[in-house]
Length: 100
Image (cartoon, rainbow, N blue to C red):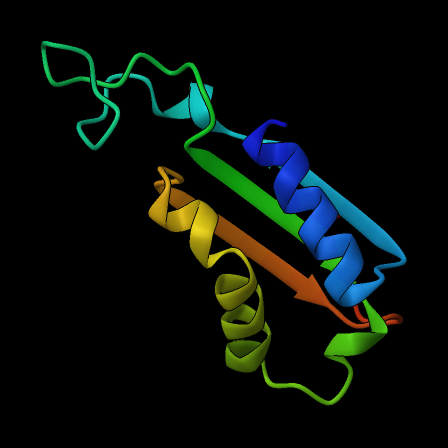
């Protein structure tokens, strides 16, 4: 199972979201230097290292923005340890304004 599919499964089980989008943004980071680099030290933009998670769930109602981010980061801790270099999180409760 891909990292993206694993994250989607975990987020669905934990938060029962009414909307969920996981966007692989790894290609936007080609040439950056970090773990997963080629022998020249620059990332080639392939793979599953940079993601944007947009999630709307009633589980976030009444939670601060920091607590929402913390909940998602804790849920996806294994993926972050296993090579996900960046995770942009956009959590919302139903009825809140979203960017998508």
